[in-house]
Image (cartoon, rainbow, N blue to C red; front, side, top):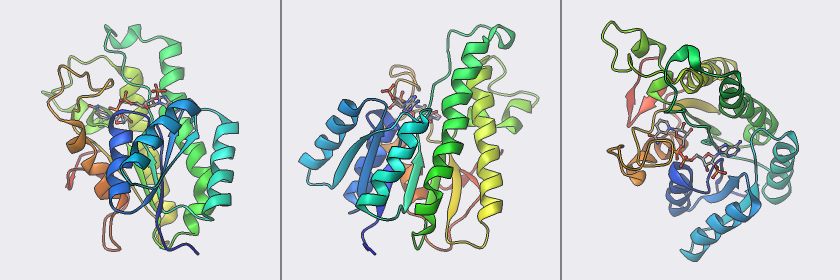
Length: 244
Ligand code: NAP
């Protein structure tokens, strides 16, 4: 078995996903960058290869059953295992949404299809490979916008935010984290939800967000590199537990 760790990062052609791949690559990990378009995946991987990292680009639209199967086949053929899965890809909140009840069925379908169903089905497809790792790590990129507890506070900071589709999809993703952690208890695999912060990306809004991308990738990288005594089934931002 290849001792070098292998990580797959989805939505790795830009933003937090690309930076996560870069930071993991800098730790000597082989990084596989998934992107909806093969050209974007290869271009992103080439940037890292040019910096001396070991990187591969694969086409991976997380909503595509064929792409998910092909990703598993690629990892099986090249490495025979997967040590780190970063479920980073997401459809962002529609900031033009006016009020919750104006959310369209299409927006709900789109958010859930990528942010929940895609994550669940990709994780399932890769589970046999994660089980072959001596210390599998799964990181689900969530958001404090998915926190039911924060939304339900009397003076919630999110009270005026009406991004129902995105927020509900991240709450559902958090539920997946909890269910999976329970199912994987007693195995070598840890699974956690990450809040990256409010980060300068397309989803975070480049002009408004206060956090630079390298800092935004830190929580994903920390959770990807958790030691044996690290947490599982938690919702974490920069080492601190977030309320579900
Ligand atoms: P971003 O720069 O907009 O990146 C989103 C990535 O997801 C892009 O690579 C995009 O690919 C990809 N993607 C979307 N749908 C996909 C699909 N069906 N299959 C594969 N890839 C898909 O945003 P980001 O801020 O880096 O977001 C990374 C993660 O952090 C997301 O899960 C997001 O919800 C979470 N997050 C971000 C913030 C923030 O403030 N930025 C806050 C909380 C949580 P294309 O280039 O093809 O569109």
